[in-house]
Length: 320
Image (cartoon, rainbow, N blue to C red; front, top):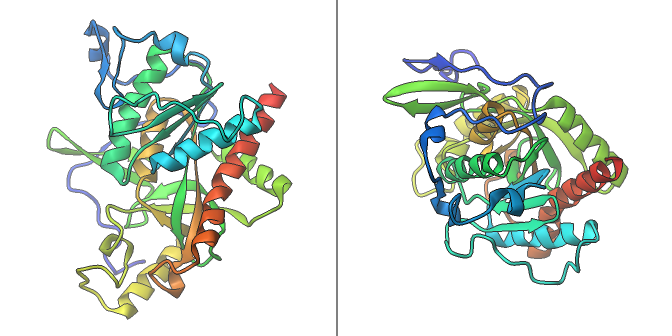
């Protein structure tokens, strides 16, 4: 939106390259850290796992799909759901949390599928992704697809719609993730695999139960002011300014807002992982700020991403 200050560039920028889409997900995991080769042991502290205490290839070497989401109970529910979809167990059976020794994250494994919680916001998912990428590397995994499933606020689409992210954009509508490293701003690409997004849309058409769109996703640093809400403890703008901003976001191709997609896309790009973000919208932000749908409706909405991703995984495995 020209003239409104939505495209302010950082003072110091170091553009980092990323893998081409055709390279993503092919072959082994790429680690962008030469220092790890000098370490005799790698402790994944927030997972309560370590290379000297656990046999990573034996535990995780067959993983082909990693699904991540904010809450631990939702990821456990997804693991139970995928167990039923792949006929690898009764979806009502309990599944052990591999990260039971820590309260930071929860991890569940069902055949070639790993389900992990990442908490809320960029810092939390960033820590999880660092250790997940190292886990996949130490496990010698190849051809891995990583999908974030979650909830979001929609812009200009009906509640319950599922958005598959084409690229994550920052609050200035730029497809970039900024990371401060040694006092300098490093800018990383946030584009996601377009072919994977199209494949997921096709799966939704085959399911034919809910609306699914491909669009840009705005990733913010908080839930209230950063997302132009009027109902936080602090608000420094008018309702007219809020609506002007959200309408500008819609015009920029943004269809939903959440708080993790930018660093997720950036880190998967650098590591050569094929990745997608699949989020259901719980409300249309052009119509209000607070989630008011009944609990049972929200529960059904939240099952839509897992249903879509479960169908995708089952279809992929049947083709292989």
